[in-house]
Image (tube, rainbow, N blue to C red; front, side, top):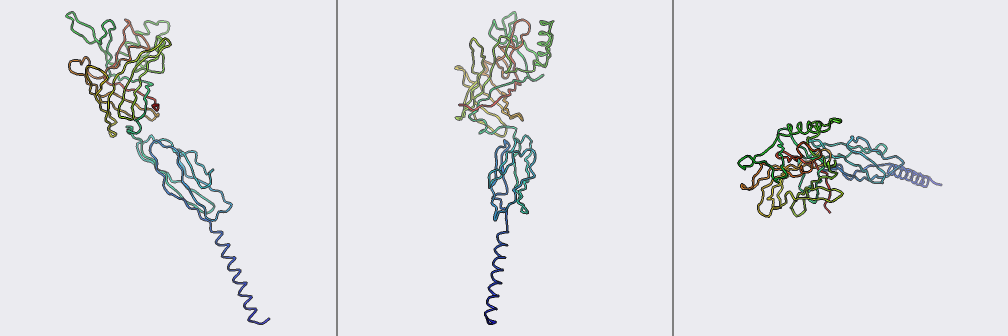
Length: 334
């Protein structure tokens, strides 16, 4: 074997070692690549995920960290995905969080951004929804309670000359009046307080065993209608409070329309919608303008109080006018 042959063999060995070393180095170059570095979602929250790729994977485990309490159910159970659930944001500021993804010595991160809570719902959040009132709130000096004389069928009494006379109280005075009347009529169990009369709880039975309801339906064709009624084992009754084709301002939460439920005249109506941090939507009738020759009470007066949950004295019912806010659960219109 000559020197030339030995040098050739040695060169081949060196090349083989270099090739093996290069192959091993290439196989060991593990890299974690996130397919996106930012995930954005609205205030309502929901499910989210980002995808990833691992170049030259090894036996390491994929780990995720850094999530705040409003990012939950963080999991890597599906290969190639990091999924999570984002809670609704009830803060009035945007929020963000950096999530760290680790694979051995490799680290990468992505940012979750969530929009701030909007006080007023968007049109999209209203269309196709039925708002079912669970509670109606009155306000001490902004809600007036009018006495309803059922024998006349109107919201007033008459003076000696036959002229209409309104009989009303501010809500705070009315609440005390009702509580005192209830306790006087129930001396063995005088449990009523003015707070019991701060509104109407639609989930509680009326004193005749019936349930009162108020439903406001908002249709995809930009019309809405509100019905108030009563259900009981023996039957029920309902009246349409208002209906019409509306326009909506998302910056103020106000729907404006002409109420056309009455066959003889119309009303100019403004309704303001708000969202609550409990997942409900409220509505308040800001304007319910009667024609001049039909304006018997200033402001909006609702008829549901014809069915009282705690009867006062004199066997009469009361109707609220002024500031009235309805707290509603939300259902899809089928």
